[in-house]
Length: 606
Image (cartoon, rainbow, N blue to C red):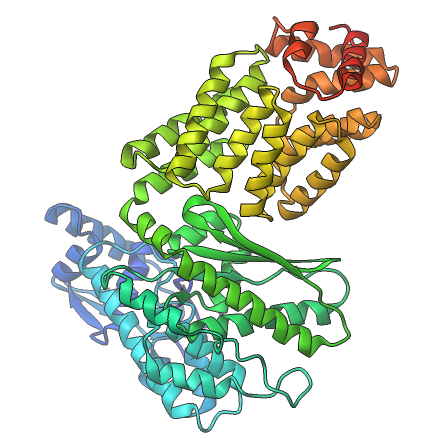
């Protein structure tokens, strides 16, 4: 900011600063008044207009009273920089205030000016403000459209004179996010995407070239009014001590984003926005707010770059893969990864178009289903039953909604396990809902998974493994399927294989649900790794379901005091628990497992 007076920042965070750069404590609604007076170019507005725009949901007398109160507070902000506003009985006038929207009023063809307005524009005009409904929001949306038009015009003017291809690509991606059909911007993107790459000579992968007739067919068959699927590619966080590898992985995601922007079958969230999403504490809420249908989650590890594409409406992993990134041959790796990931994303988005259209037709069913999934992240009976309620709500909106049917099956099987009462009716209900889910959608991996879980608890280990094999074939990188497969392997007297598969599940889902850790504790117990079993159980958020296995582990280690503590905790939750009755129900392929578990539980005092 230069000169006397104040400066109003309207792009990104809305705030007023004085000549020293200090933030002025102006009321929020007062800032909206300043934004309107500054950005509308009028500098003066009637009290009636401001009152009805800023407080549209209030009676006229109340709106005028709120305006008087706000203006009184603003007029008492007078400092050496002068008055923020002045007001008469009928009008309000802007004080000595400069505003960042002025940069858009003086747009020229220089690269420096273009970079400045691009930085502003991608932060969004009044992007974080709580906008009043009605006329004020309509005004803001119209201003955003005008700023976008000016940015687009400036991009066309500056393209031939700018050597900063990265800046031009970023602008193109942002504009195509809003209008995938903008041919002029698409052509600019393709021209500026053929610049120097890592080795200074060869061009980056032309990731849009694989796409053929499928796009035209998808467009021709889709309803004209249906919005396109929206894809967000979340860049990986920094990993390890080699910044070059992280830079390459981030560049790969940018390559893929540029390639996908050339397609008309989807819209793509610009990298700048994707970076904000990745940093958000509540990613799910951020993705929902931005209307994202698919998220490509990327993570770096010692094994390279791991990517998984998630269909957010059903929280389903539809594709995943891992790619080696090493200092040798970085350019070739970058091109190959960009090509394979972009092709996979395109195929999944286009083949998943029926699911996307189904989601658009029944959003309430999907929202209720996701609510149920959130409850199932824990292992308490109240959470399980709340999840079942949400799944039933989803079925009210769509009777044959396979994910919800599968979710209900899961709640019954989980309740059977938690209550440890050998209630066969719970398993029958679980099996019926799982099979109904398969009838509705025979390629839904979670439905086959639930059949596998039910068959496990019914003692049919071969049928259980067959169903889980099918689920894993349908979705080889679905962490929940791997966990259930591993759990059956524990009962099939193959705890070593189970622990290895659980390791895969946890690598795919690092913030592992309690169920993964509980199963890992059981596998460790049957391998004689009692301390490891206790460690897995201690990492659980809700530790009570594992109290029996922990008590048995402490008993096998000879610590009867700690074994007794966990036995008492377990009996407090389930006072009628009987070792022999429970072991008669729990299926183990080989007798040695029952004997080992009985020995630990008896030593613990059950």
